[in-house]
Image (cartoon, rainbow, N blue to C red):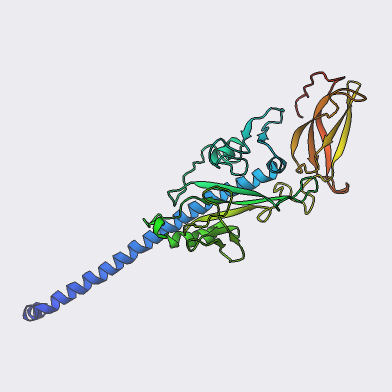
Length: 333
């Protein structure tokens, strides 16, 4: 021991070198630990952000499933949440100002009001200073609901890039770590803009999405890099996700239901694209009385494998009166 101390006194530079090496190694280890912690934090943020986008995407898919006819037809979208014939939520076809809040661009609050997102959901992305924005389209152009050849598709995305690391979005910067992790968490319908002014690309590279961030109804000629999103609609899911049956998600063919109540007979024309499992109020077209009578009924489209096509319409509750008297159906069983 004394000999070692004598050596250190004899060669003091060796002690300084050893201490310096220890400090350098400790700093490298500490830096690696900090880097790993920062990377783990980014992965957690990416998972949260992907979950938020998927949650809104699922709500938007349900929105297109449930209200496909209202979205495709002219006029405001009127939503009857409890099947009592009264509009609970009205989403305008053309909002008073801007493009947000229309039936083809429902806001987060619209989806909450329609019961498709929890009331606690906040329009505040985890990894961006932007907001969630939705875009839906009725395709192809000139399609006909009568011919049943329309489809609804679109996407949910962010209005600003992912920049949790303090990047400058205006300069084309975004957090590539978070964007990459998000693609793995979002699944097959996830996408992100990897470069400015280019369409968004999916993780597998099997599809691209041209974005309309400013909401003017046309593809933006300039887009920022680092915009993530999830596509929805016909390309991403079935029309009726609750009871998916190939090619028979809807009752096919216009038809007339006739029923009798209190010795009065009524007949009701039903639309040809009523979703399976969906209930709505139909009003008798013959409100003037005539051979039938004015009235209304709660109609439901149910799956019947023996029908051709395998879906049918049934009356849950009806009200049928002579002439054009007021008629309120009983409660739906």
